[in-house]
Amino acid sequence: MAGTNLKCRECATTYELEPRYVCEQCFGPLEVAYDHSRFVDDVGALRRRIQGGPQNIWRYGDFLPLDGPPGPALRSASRVGLPAGCTPLLRADRLAERVGLGEVWVKNDAHNPTHSFKDRVVAVASQRARELGFDTLACASTGNLANAVAAQAAALGLPSYVFIPSDLEEQKILATGVYGTNLVKVRGNYDDVNRLCTELSGEREGWAFVNVNMRPYYAEGSKTLSYEIAEQLGWATPDRVVAPIASGSLFTKIAKGFEEWLELGLIEGSVPTMNGAQAVGCSPVAQAFDAGADVCRPVKPDTIAKSLAIGNPADGPYALELARRTGGAIDAVDDDEIRAGIRLLAETTGIFTETAGGVTTATLAKLAARGDIGADEKVVIVITGDGLKTLDAVRDTFESYEIEPRLEAFEAAVEQGVHV
Ligand SMILES: *Cc1c(COP(=O)(O)O)cnc(C)c1O
Ligand SMILES: [Zn+2]
Image 1 (spheres, rainbow, N blue to C red):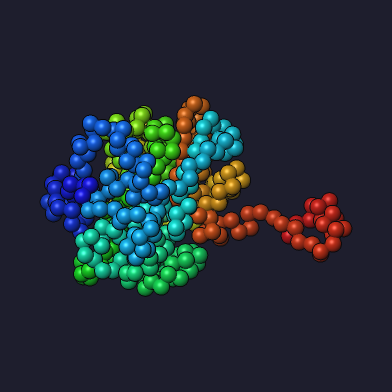
Image 2: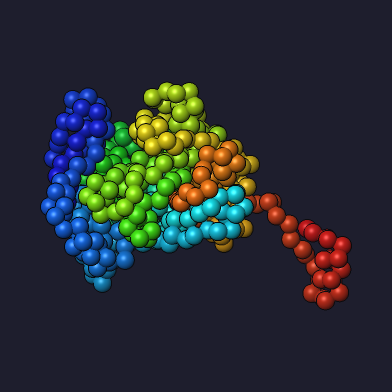
């Protein structure tokens, strides 16, 4: 086992690596703790061991809370599940130029089996769930988690229950139901869905709610994003990371991944400046950042960025602390800026992202315009999901020609600038 125990983030009480997510002493959240001291003597060997691993997140098995990663991908899908990770990191010079920056990289996590970064967290949570003897996967989802849990359960041959707000984007509902899951639409927002699932997880023995009772294991999956970024940058950290915030788990775990590897001396550099991105219509963390507060006041979400629509973010205080400690910030962009962000990324990189990626790209543009980013900084933006999942966000944002199938018709239309 690579982890040693679960540890309370508030009072440091420790627990076995069991299906538990909240501290019995103080109700604080639990996090996986590790002992990496055995690696300190030979970092070169560890680096080679990682490089020799599979082309997916299991290459980082020494840093994940599993008895053993599921083994080579050649094994049957029902054992290995859907492998996630090893997504592209692309240098985006045209994007950098458009926003007036020197060096921008795009970590494109839409390149996962169900087209969002959620495949990473679900892969880790579901493997741990199997090790702990659970027989059913479940989740409370803002959309992408539903896709990832339903697909992972199908690959592993486990039954699943997926709970979503009933007003979710149609693309995300269709791309979940297709896997044969039990799809439960709840009349309410994500925070209502989450409350229901928290109650249910106490009732249903054998059910692993990946982001409720399995949350400490789930959260560790996000660290693999920073491991990959560091490896892809030649075993070094970037100067700055811009990433979206829903519950704040992804944002804080990206930093934890860099911190673990810096501490071991596995990579060069220092903890990046961390910039969080939210939608104005659901910005409890950005509002608390602005107010200088240490905790977030819950809000009622109203934004096209539904995948980020968590009004009561569990890791909000840790996200605030991280942004302040690293000299970063947490900003919010409105729905028009989100649509423009999607177009900006698409037009300059060929990458079509969902609304969450629009939030991230628009936040990069905002930081650049504000002069917050130095000319020689190496900036990574984390694109967490695919544009085909939120097509409504780009509907009517561009024009096209419609013509009869004749040469003159085309030429006349172009000449007159006739669009439909
Ligand atoms: C879930 C999600 C996030 C971030 O979620 P956290 O709860 O903050 O970890 C970001 N982008 C997309 C597309 C997501 O689905
Ligand atoms: Zn505690």
